[in-house]
Length: 133
Image (cartoon, rainbow, N blue to C red; front, side, top):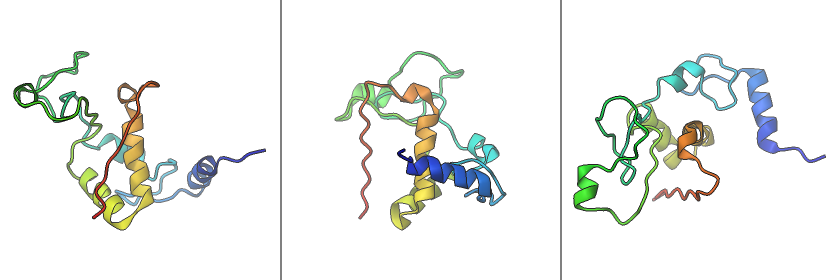
């Protein structure tokens, strides 16, 4: 019988009630952040499919739009996926993950991308680049 390490960690975390990374309240979620703080993250509702910046177009549309900047000067990549805006507390989670190698922060960030099923496809390869210098 093979045991999945992350599944075991999830079960232990849920059982012990590890404090939320953002509000420090006891929580029983396996991702180190409570449901209230997860809901309060600065989620991207509509963003440019090319650069990932927020578009101000009103209610969430099923259209995949490109911003004016990308239409005028397209970047050297085809697609950006943005789950959250780079605003508090996401910015501090990224800094903690990047500079302090704080894996629980990285886990929250990974969950935020995985949470939005429209960002994930079985035929999509995701490369995440971090400059750790």
